[in-house]
Image 1 (spheres, helix red, strand yellow):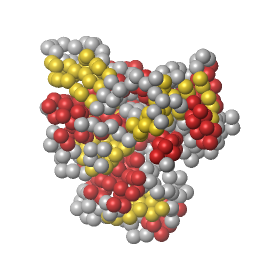
Image 2: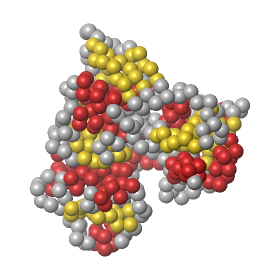
Image 3: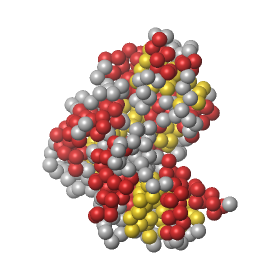
Image 4: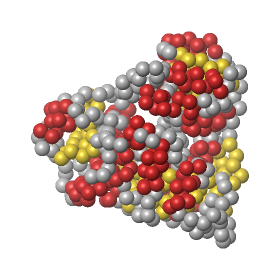
Length: 486
């Protein structure tokens, strides 16, 4: 495993970086790749700390637009002149080492910090809750941040998507706690030393970096290490539960032996409800001991068992921080969701359109289970595989992920900047699904025009059309809704 954002040296330099960022000096920080989810959050936080922030990215984005409104200078495209005048430069791990701005920063002798070093530094300035997991971390971190705001703790946070109720994915406030989405890609989270870790789940991903699932598991185990004051894991996830047992973590889920348990779960088309029950469970024990306590009932205005689990994880972390259940319940009752997480986009000709970021097998499975529970006449799943490397390694894993869909359409791969791999296309996923469900309607659409033509012929009133993927498929619902409006 080796890429520019590994954290082996970040730990040694994070004290120095933290001192510079918190010294009171007003620094000019240039952010390369500023439009990305992680880097835009860092830019927001650095700006809120009082530093002058500029940045660049290859294309416009909603994140860049929001930063511009906040007074950040954002350049479209990379150019050596963009870094002139900066005190230091930080960059996304997706930016290649040969980038013209990174080369210029080196030639000028500027401090050059990868994302991992900045995150490590910020986690030293504030007490940190690291929310980790292959998926669910954005939603869980957003829920937890909203709870801490409700409790008046004035938290800071760095999250991979905008918190709807707050209008930003990065906030620097006066409180002592920082909620941070701990990203496993490129080994970024390995530099962190949080006081609390929330681990939602562990699934094979980013194997182009980790080289094996075992290496990925080892990385998550390291994050749950002995220096963490309070580790919490989702007891409903096989690997998270195993790692939690090794580290003596607090388990949260639906199992009767979990320290925080969900009971009387009720799932609706646009909501989820459950009671949170807690008991005193010594770390590392096999079951509860002491008296059970029912904290109260959580009512979420977003659907799905996966969202209920995310809410339970966020609630447990907040309760461990001493937040009252009243604050937990009020915050979660007004949680409006996260963009691209079962996001209702509208209705056209009687067809409901929902868009979701799901791009891994278990994410697809959870999203379609939520769709199936909504009571639509048919669920039409449209899936865009993400990255050639991920499609090559995981295509067979999608075989049974679409069992809750009546119709499945798979598009070609969204490359995310990767070069094509011979023989790897979205058809690999479509074929894997077809082999597992021969009686179902599975279609591969190699072009956008073919996809739209098929959907125009297939969709009918009463259907739910669920677009899924981490690429540009997210614009498809708007294309259908716009056509109807016109």
